[in-house]
Image: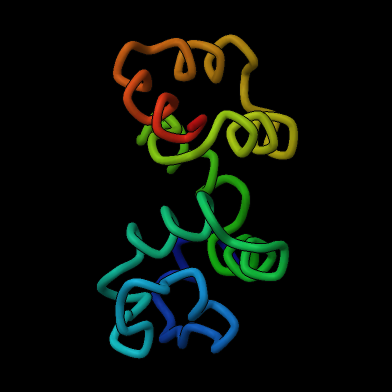
Length: 112
């Protein structure tokens, strides 16, 4: 089953993902309508089980495409380097994302 086919079926978020969505009503979040938000949160703040669930839903190719499309925004440098290794993202590409001036605000807040 390819990533596109997996995305077309009805998917219910597991209860264990609720802690990743601590600031909103996780029961109102739908994979069909909030896919981008879910991917962003799980990639940025999900625990190992949440990440495994996400990878099973979309596959590594879709995760790599999401990271490329968003240039790693919202993810810590540690998380980006993890995904670089795990998904085989080009080192130069990830380094470019991390060096981009737009990250200065994020990285400054994350290091305090």
